[in-house]
Length: 269
Ligand SMILES: Nc1ncnc2c1ncn2[C@@H]1O[C@H](COP(=O)(O)OP(=O)(O)OP(=O)(O)O)[C@@H](O)[C@H]1O
Image 1 (cartoon, rainbow, N blue to C red):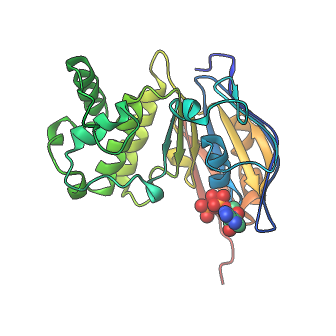
Image 2: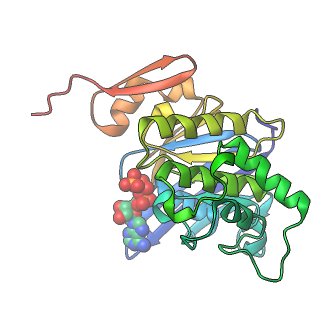
């Protein structure tokens, strides 16, 4: 459910590194409280775009405005406090011996350990416990982070981001490495998150249509560092658009509000 003002606005963003044009002419807006999914082949610039949004990759051209603040004219640390970035492949290095509940609580401080000088108040612990319950971690809150499965670690990172009250969640391939059941559980968590009365703005990079939240409002298609399409899911998630995007025969069906993609009868020989 979009709240009608832009939480994210990129105008003509380009990134050049080591002579490579990683992003070029990227312009897009994401409404506050909405969910935007970014799709594209390997190397199309999806993670680079997320890194720009998170303020970790500085554009060579163009402007980036996040949460009403223009990068380059604000203290980036202030903006980052409003952003929860989840990249399982580059997750923060928590002490493996920390219990999950403490890891989730670090989201209150934006740290990877609980700061010695900061006492977590009873109401903050209640909030930690609420978010752990919302992702189904209550029963194992005392378990060491290092002993968790990939799916449990993902849920821990989601609960940690939600505890921080981040207004913007950037999820880069959140279900990478998860089995079917853990992926389904992660998708259900995202569906519940977006059904809240005041949902965060969510940008998700994914290679799998079936893991996009049902409430996804906008699709951005990327290729060669450029946005080659953006708009409503029903207009963009078609067999023809994805066949052209991925240069292979893709069949898209919609079932029970969710999109599914399969590779068609392409000659793989
Ligand atoms: N620091 C860098 N210097 C030079 N090239 C880079 C740098 N970072 C990324 N690239 C290149 O930019 C392109 C886009 O990379 P990016 O990681 O954003 O792709 P992606 O769409 O997320 O791919 P994948 O689906 O494989 O994760 C790639 O060709 C990559 O090699």
